[in-house]
Image 1 (cartoon, rainbow, N blue to C red):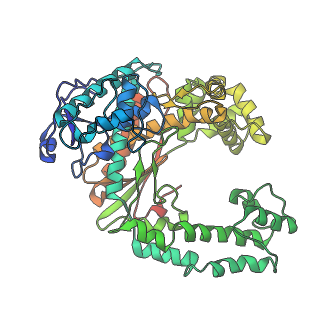
Image 2: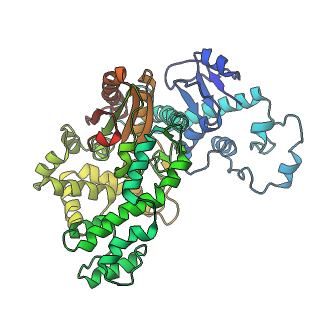
Image 3: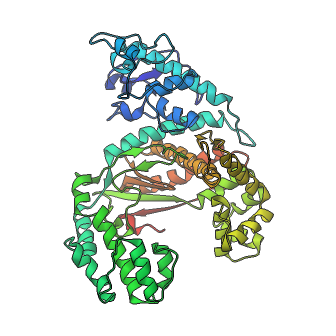
Amino acid sequence: MLAVVVRGSELGLASPDRAWIGSLDEVAAAPDRLVLWSAAATPLLPLRPRQVWDLAAVHKLLHGGRRDDPGAVWAAVHGLPAPPRAGDDLTLLDAALSPVEGFVEPVRADGSLHPDAARQTDPARWAALALEVQRRQEQALRALPDPRPVPSGPPLPVVTAWAESAAALLCVELEHDGLPLDHAEAVRLIAATIGDGDRQARDAPVLALLRGDDVDLRNPASVKDALLRLGIDVPDTRSWRLEPYRQAHPLVDALLTWRKAERVATTYGYGWLGQHVRAGRLRGEWTAADGGAGRMTASAGLHSLPAELRSAVAAGPGHLLVRADLGQVEPRVLAAVSGDRGLARAAAEDDMYTPVARQLGVDRPTAKVAVLAAMYGQTSGAAGQALRQMEQAYPVALAYLRGAEEAGRVGRDVRTHGGRLVRVGTGGVGRYARNAVVQGAAAELFKAWAAVVRNGLGDGRVVLCLHDELLLHVPAREADAAVALLHDALQATSAHWAAGSGVRFVADVGVVHRWSEAKG
C-alpha cells in the first residue's frame, strides 16, 4: 500500500470517504491529505506531503506502549486484544488462513486483522480499512477532554494527532537527509582528542599520576577507591560530581579529560565515522516517540554528540545553519498544563527563574533548583527545602505534579496535556509519572512547532530535532526568513496549544556556519 488519500477538509475535521492508491506522481498531484498505516513503512520520498494522518503514531498517542504494527492498531480501535507480532508463534488458525498466493480476507471471523493482510489484501480494501481506523481513532481523540481553559480550534488531542503524524513523517525525512558533517573536520577533531586511538596511550597520563596504583579506569568502584586514597571522598564518580574537585588534585583533571577522550574513542571514533557518515551526512534511524513520554529519539549518536565534535556539523556551500532552542520549556509547560497563574506570570519574562527567585526570596540558582526539584520530585537536601518553598509559592502547579505522582505510585496510567497515554503499569514509579506529564507535554509542543516550521521552509530542511532544539539547514538567502519563521511558528503553535493559559514561550535563535558557534 502506497498511500490512502482522504478528501481535503478543515484541520481535524477529516471526512474519510474515499480510499485510493496510486503512484508518487498521482499522490503529488492530489490536493488531499494522506492517511498512512505508517510513514516509516510507506515509500513516499521524494514526495514530502504537508499533512498526513499516521495510524501507527496516533495509536501510540492513544494507547501508549511500543507496538504500532497494523494488527495492534486495528485491535485497539475495535477493543480487541493485541495479536501476536509478525514473526511470533502463529496459531493453527493463522497457518490455515495464510495462502501461498492470491488475496486474503483481511478481517478474520474473530474481528482481528489477518497476519498477512498488509501483503496479501487487495490494496483498495487495505486502504478502506485504514480509513476506518482513522475514523475510529479520531472519534476516540474527540472523546478525550480538552484541557485548555480557553479551547481554540479543533480539540487539542486531535491537533496532537496531526502533529505526532507530522513528526513521524519528519523522522523519515531526517533519516533520509542526514545531518551535514564536515568529514575532514570530524577526523581532525577525533585525532586531536584520541590520537591514533591506542588505548594504552590514552590511559597512560592518568595512570602515571596514580604512581603504580593498580586501578581499572573503566571500573567506577576502582576509580572511587583510588580517589579515596588521595583524600577525595565522593559517593560516586560521575563527571558532574568530580568537577568541583578538578583543582583539588591533578588526577581529577586528568581523569575528566580522559573520560572525554574515552567517550569519543569508544562511541564517536573513526569506526563511527565509517559506519554512519555517507556523502557528507551523518545518518541515523529516527523514532517519533519513545516508549514513555513521547520524545523523539535517534541512533548514531545524533542526540548525544559531544561538544568537542560539534564544530564538525557545518553548513554546506551556499547554506547556513539556523539553530533554535526553546528557553526553559519544561517550567513554562508546567505553568501551562497546571493552570498555575503565578507560574504563568513568571513565564512572561525571558528568564522565568528570576521572578521565581523573587517570589521565593532566594537567589536565581536556588530558584532553578526549586523548579527542577518540583518537576523531578527530589526531596532530599537543598532540593527538598526548595521543593517545600515551591509548594507554598505555586500550590496549583505542585498539586498537578503531586496528582500525577500519586497516580503513578498506585500503577495508574496518566495522560499528557495533549492526550498521550503514558503507561505506568503495576508497581508504578511515582516520580516517573510526575515528570512524564511535563516532559511528554513539552515533547508534544516541540513536535507541533517543528511541524509548522517544516511546512513553512522554502528550500531549507530540518536536519536535527534535539529535545528542545531545532537545527535547520537553509540556503543563505533564506536564513533571515527562517529566523522569522521559527519565532512566528512558536507563537502560532503555543497560541492554540496553551490557549487561555497566559504562558509565554520563547526561543533563542541564531544563524551560524557551524553548530559549535551557536550559543548555549
